[in-house]
Image 1 (tube, rainbow over the protein chains, first blue to last red):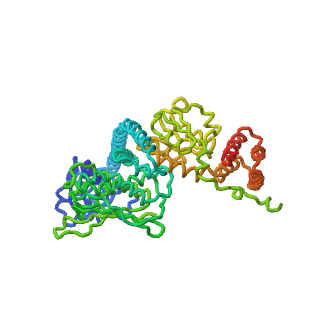
Image 2 (cartoon, chains in turn cyan, green; image 1 turned 90 degrees about the horizontal axis):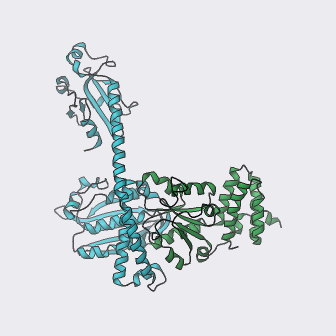
Image 3 (cartoon, each protein chain N blue to C red; image 1 turned 60 degrees about the vertical axis):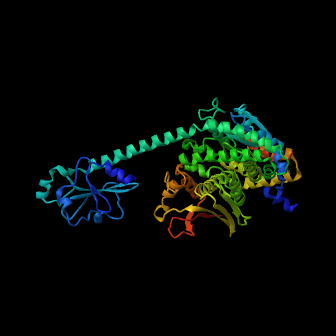
Length: 357
Length: 217
């Protein structure tokens, strides 16, 4: 349910939505006079720009139409007669609808209590989210210890650079290091949900995007192999792009989703190509595609597509929401498209791509 | 000698290899969890790192004993400020704006602590790996452990004291000349001579010390 629908449920007075559907309030419902009205043009009275949060308007018949402005949109109260401001309502109608008298002040008070409750609910939800995430602190501390030890072991492996040392490590050590690295990045993901500003913490640094995407592919190699999926990197990129640390989480979400929602036996293709001063990144996977009608919602918090539910029963619907927070912080936009769609229209190549400079 | 008159700070800036800067710059990690930062591995890579589990000496931080402070948000400075690490960060930044501080915490999720992250020169979110730590430190060393950064900090103090642009230009020429000669004493005494206010002179000398560290004096 969207916020405006919720406001209408909590409205004591009758309302009408943009599609002219009437909904009675929990105190007053629409008078028969309005239900039978042939015009039903209440919304036509509402000007494009409302100066006041609550405005009094009158329809041709003489009933009051009262748009109430919220951040989420307008709730339009109709089927009432404002006691003091309504001048054109004929006395016969006024008399017949005595019970539908309201005052604009009462509506203003309703609006303001609704906003107050909203703020309290927001604060409560945020507090609960923060408390839930704060409980991860102990896990983070334990992970630190494991990670320090894994790094110390990697440090003893021959090699001149960190990458070389990781590459030369034994398969089990490499696997341990990758798993803890993945756990680290995943633990950091939770922060963006409760505090989207975390996506722009720290300084932007010139980052070799190819290396980050390649590293992420390597971290997911084992998970992918278990599922019978292969990950391939392609493209050539030398450009360094100014990014926040959060970029790594964006890379994680896209590769993680691609592996998770790939059909077993298929492959994930990650490509990074220089384009002008920036880079073009695309992550492709083959599996059930996202229907067009759902493609607008995939970046919404908690939204899971029907395809996602079919391919993987578990999932929070937060991955792409977090990815969007991070791409917004980098002033770029992740786009989605389907290629090679089958004749049934449900299977093809899912492509997520973006450009950064 | 005419050219010396127009000598500027930018003219005496010398590029120093990163390996050398890593050795020269003193880093302190302040965190109640001794395993959260890969100090040992970084020492092996040539960084000069000390670590405290809480703020052991505020005066050493104020005096600018460390070029980079990696500061946790909680459990490190409760005896100094109810805001813990955030209070220390605010205090140090006010006292010496050119002090390089990295916010280091796992509490990125907390909206109420956003100020901590925004005020710092950079940030590291726990858990961290050694590669990320090196990236952040090296970037700061190259971008901020520089003569230009410290000179900027010095100028901001002078400006807040109402020193005129002409006097600041004169000072810049004299300091640049002393740096060119490699004369630490002259650099210190020139900077010290700008003001008679002891508190301001103290803050300026902190920056002068940083400049000396930069040049390996």
